[in-house]
Length: 144
Image (cartoon, rainbow, N blue to C red):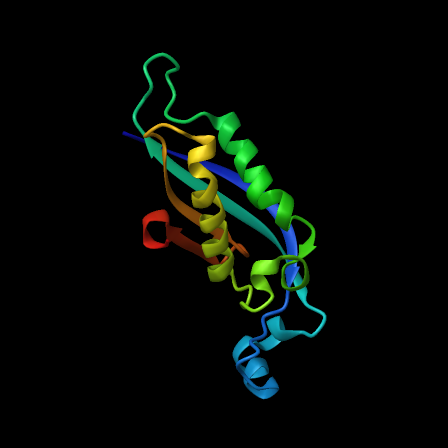
């Protein structure tokens, strides 16, 4: 069994602000990330898949198919966008990197069988680097 991880990048802005909290609570919780004008990150997303070595191709995953799907479902919709204003899923959900990782995983899982109709490969996890010090990871089997 092989694990293959592919790295992708996109730039996006967001504001961390919860409608369930007061202005003061938001400022205390999110600090400078609660700036009313938002702020941006150069996100690095790692998509890890696993599967057996396919004898005829010598590969565990079709990288071109993975690149196409991640480009369509993740990079295209998020790159150079304001997550709060331009991504419907974040209209009522705080676009933390944890929630961004969940949304990326959901998008890939929802379209996985279209790109990979066989039993293999399987989506294993998503890692998202927000900064050089902040990295978030979610296992694909941990969410619906």
